Length: 372
Image 1 (cartoon, rainbow, N blue to C red):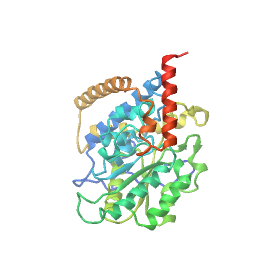
Image 2 (tube, one colour):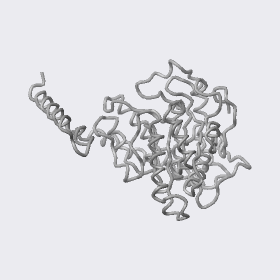
Image 3 (tube, rainbow, N blue to C red):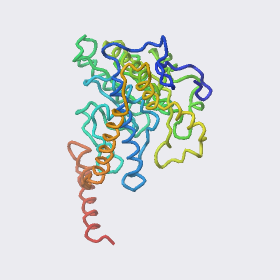
Image 4 (cartoon, rainbow, N blue to C red):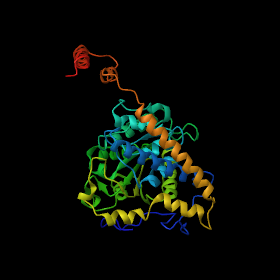
């Protein structure tokens, strides 16, 4: 697979024809991926994405960053987590949020502007979306330092040992925060896995202008392992992430995973991707679609877990119910109180900020009384 002039072959278990590649380590033990569940998660996550785009076009959301084409990378990695592990996402990990049990209506609240974040990070061990590119890498490393100091790493207790999974895009590799996070993770042997979804484009900048080597190769310079996987192969992404998280929980230090995939939609709904890339490139990646690929395996003659059209029909009904709930839930999100930004910023509000709050609330009240 060629990626913008970089030809290092990513590790692959399931090829684009839905065939398991011989000798590529099918992860068949008890911790292996539930293929039916993975297919379901990818399909429903894609429906969340599709409905959110429609809601934005209807004026119900201010913005939406699509993840179309990245479902395999996200469900594969997200399903490898244990409940006690902690996730630090970017702003595009909608399928990972789904795998962690975050209500997708809460995801919409952030982009509708009705919440200051959208969900309780402690409830699902899934932190708030980070819009500042690369900032979450340092947040995750700091949390991993805390796990070490709390003694929750390397004890051998499967229910206690924890790891941190940090998501980043290929564009974040050019940020200083990310490089600093790699340095600290390596120097202190921290229990953190960096999962880079290399979707080929940092907005309009192709990966080729950011790096002369595959992203996974950068790990070597910091002193920890890097692995390059086919990001449209949900099985490979799951297996690589599971192994890296196991290593981290056992005290074996960090890993960088580069999932080679493709962002098939614009960067966000405010972007025009046809100004910087060609349609045939998108078509080529559509033929490698992670959902279609797994369906071919599940319905093929050598399927390890055969399914039929009845399974797909039941899932389609589940999709429609989810879509309806998203539409209704989005429109019923409560209008935020104008005092919330002040109320939830500091535990103890200083005098100057309290004065600004009172002036702001008075201004809002006056505008409501006289909308002219």
